[in-house]
Length: 294
Ligand SMILES: [Ca+2]
Ligand SMILES: [Ca+2]
Image (cartoon, rainbow, N blue to C red; front, side):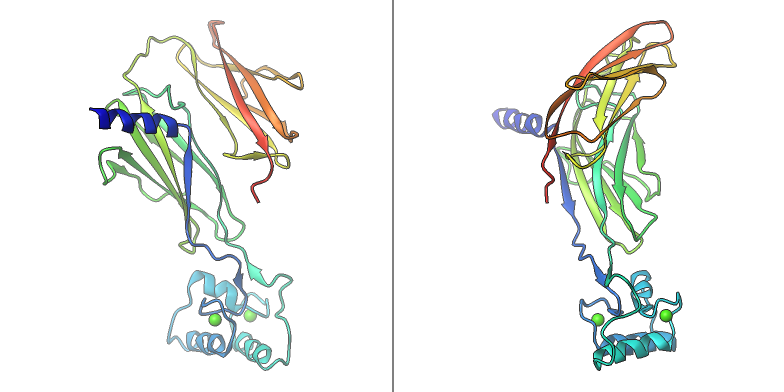
């Protein structure tokens, strides 16, 4: 019993934390590195020539890296250009940049029910915010774990939809795992601890979640706060008030509040939701604007 208590305590402490597991993504990938071994040499020219005579097939990433003369085709001229660079006849390929950045920028994993508001029998929609310059479309896979099982109790199909809806059948602690892949098979993964309550739905209006657009907010990026309502009688109207700057977005059907950039510091946003019957619910949300991580 003591052990169970300590596990639960740790889980409570971790509740609001998400953990990112970065896949080994060695961006940038270099033009001319057709065999993707991080070196540009005569082997790449050979590899490219072998693909031209169908001895091997280039991967999706290799097809981008092989077009060193930037004419949107892979031909023997590309192989020649790699050989010329190897022989120091030319210094650069016909690209402004020396490489391709396939890095997946994983911003956040959020739900339309906050950690303490999720209930048995009420569908929860999780949403992953991730971006990449090269390698789109991104695809998403979700896994649901209980804290007691090593195997997931549910695995979603791989999909271009960044959202995933799941209805929990039992109260308790869960881990939600979201993995994002680019078209080259590179990935990033995030784990979110999640708690599901017994169903206490009495039909009353409540704010089920308030989220920020990124896990880490810094002084250079646009900050957006999103609220979700549950219960009462839709449609809902939302009002947002940012404390320090007397910045108010009055009641409207928009559940997002685009604040813009903010100096370093701590802030709070008061969210009010009003339903079709005129009932109101409020919630306060705190966030911090920090130095960029790196
Ligand atoms: Ca190479
Ligand atoms: Ca070419």
